[in-house]
Image (cartoon, rainbow, N blue to C red; front, side):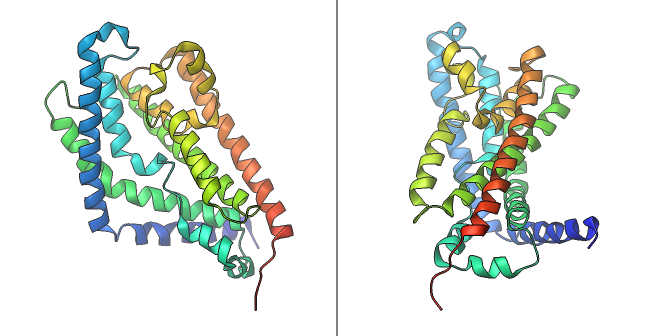
Length: 273
């Protein structure tokens, strides 16, 4: 079989899951309402802190506001908790046997499905959030990008962040093969990923020594780079290093996931009839 024919299979998985995700419009509306409420709440909290002494913070208030709005608009791309229960269930209840019968690579199939699932949710939700954020009066609205070049880099790093997020999720799926129940694994990774990715508190707000360590971890490559780059919080050598780390962690985490996938396929045991 030619390489192009093999890739066509995974694109079909991607296309089908993407089309399926676009059908959940009511769920998207509920998600948009939640993201508006959460975004405004976060901005009000930041505003209260900035009123004490704005000069004490590493990001100006407008950059922090843009960070929050972009985080809400593209939440589906990098949300660490947005893992697929269907995959975990197939591992636990033995339906993974049906996946193994298909003439496809499990890792590639799940990766394409997970990417499509996140992209479809983001397409449904991002435009209303971005529109309202852009029309909201200052200082609570989202600012335009620092420049055209920064916007292009923002899009590139956002897609790299999506790829890293899916790769980390794939690593968790593969680790689930080696556990009796994946619940503990999910809770552990979700906790550390939320904290170290900047989903709760943007990384610049941490003490310098702690921030420098956190920026080296793979979780910082998920959303931290794109959101800070858009507002101009990342520039120069720091920006180049962050992008290089994104690519590095994408390669490393993906390779680790594929290795674990091969190990899991060799030791998998399906109980029952």
